[in-house]
Image (cartoon, rainbow, N blue to C red; front, top):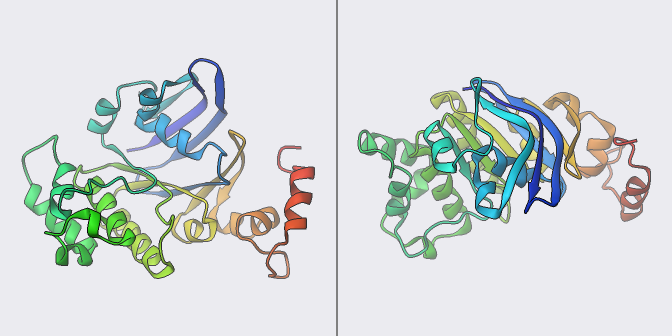
Length: 263
């Protein structure tokens, strides 16, 4: 399935303009990263695609979103999910009182066939979950909970997986494990992925193409290699200067003054 977002604007409560005419696309079978600082509009973009902005009094007021040519902007999130667009929310959002396996089964609530096969697929992608299948999610580690969140999304048989800050709050080794699984999900299951990440280095190692957001706009896009070699991305998203040194707060202040990308 091909996702296209064309010139959308998103408003909350009819007065707060958050997304200002952005366009992006995720071709079938590809991994694409959406990068940017906190508050840039990344999560709102994902919720516009999945339809979840309707639960927060948000609405796409201009432009359109399409899945294989079918317009889906402002549709009910359940209808969009039935098309195969599944979002993994920031902060994991597991059902803490349910077991790991019960959480996973919740992802398959819209169907009855093939559930055991899909459960085996999830355990194959995330072997640690098999060992804690009967444990209440509230007693699982943050890494295990993130695996549950991704696994639950897989149980819905996604065609496009929207992942919001999957690395947030996790140990470095767990982040590697999560994103290795994402690459397998993409290659072995053919699932397209749109990643929202503040951790630009991690995202660009996994994705083939990326977009950079600032203040509700796309300010830069290109292949992962192009973005990794871009001076501004190195300075302000990879945290490196041109000679490979950590950026300083003074550099960040200078960047905020010049706003070269938006100039």
